Length: 359
Image (cartoon, rainbow, N blue to C red; front, side, top):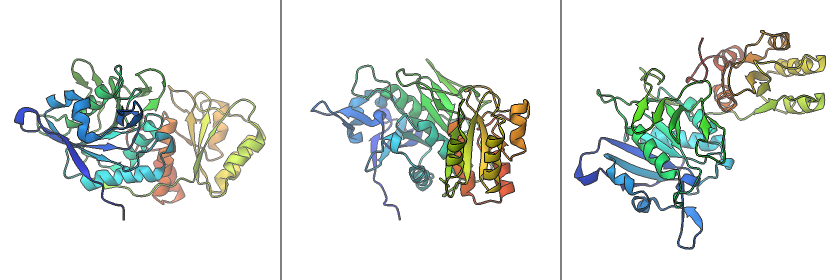
């Protein structure tokens, strides 16, 4: 059984005003939760003292509590086990809070937001991932703005009291993106994330500008938190000159159950007999292969050109306009459901959490 982690209160509504919402912040690690100590060394901040580092919190009319993992995770070390733990924390605290903010390192944040998007089915409350490029102790930090805006979005309500953004999302710089659509595109500037095939759900300017038509509707069923992910998966990125030995070494991994095939353009791949034979052999072994474009914009259209029509005959599935981050986590999620081969293929090509555009 997982140990119960302590929750500390870092902020209550200002000036004794009643809180409009209660938000649980889950600190997993990353730059956003780092500050300089008295020795000038970056270390995880003490969230009991966060009001001193972020005085802006005093102006928020909400109750904010923090649950910190005992050992913060560098996002490069995040695993599916961590995603299952985050989902379990949200499940355990779901009835006590109106929304959740997950503080996370930027390098794999898009993967984590996608994974939580699949694991939290019928989500009726906001789960907002955010992070920072610069620690909170620096003068030109983006940590304060990202954190405070994420809290604001997580607390946002319609006049009837329902959540304004009842889905897993990712806020960074000025944009709130759907979790299953986000991709990290920048390491040196504050605008680190984009969502090329779906506009932002919210733009943060002087005011928060919500695009309600893009936000997923409230579910009609209760929250279901899934508890299994299958990590027997891989990514095969094509490039000119790729050899049969390389393809076989990847598709021939013992126990492999799924592969994301990153192809050219609208889903095109080599037509050499050896390449098609490798795909066919893997498919016949029960490996599910999902075709995802290397392009940031556009979509896979298998069969549009001869170079992709041959993939269909080898059992390769079209991934439409899904990102690689959303595709690999979707593959883990769907395989973890333990369904039949036919049902697995149907789910992989269906829109489960707004990760693909239904035409």
